[in-house]
Image (cartoon, rainbow, N blue to C red; front, side):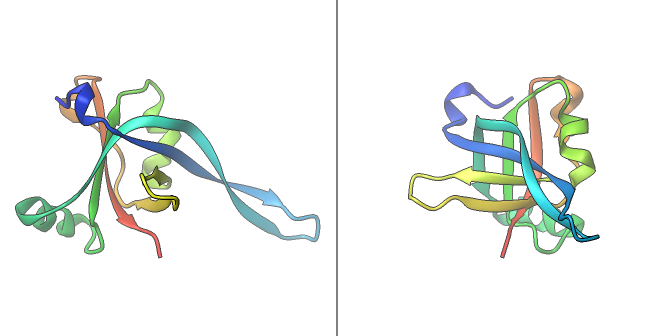
Length: 118
C-alpha cells in the first residue's frame, strides 16, 4: 500500500471525447475526470521495466493514485491519459497503455502503466 507521503505529485486523469465540428466531421478533445489528484509518478527501472515491456514495449512510467469508485468507467479500459503537473512549468502527458488496476482489490490504490506521449 502506498503511503500518503509518497503521493507528492499532482496529476489529472483525462478521457477522450468526440465532438462534431459542424462540417460532417469530428474532433477529439480531452475531458478531465479527476483533476489535480495526489499521485506517485515514477519511471520504471530494472525488473519492473522488463515486466512492463511485456505488456507494451513503450511503457516507461507507473502512476499510482488513491482509489476512486468509478475508476474502471473513468479510465475506459486504458483509453485515457494522465496529465502530470510537474515541478517545472511544462505539464507532461502520459498515455495509459493498459487498463488501470485496483491493487490487490483492496480499494486503496489504482495503478496505471504509462508511456510518455510524443
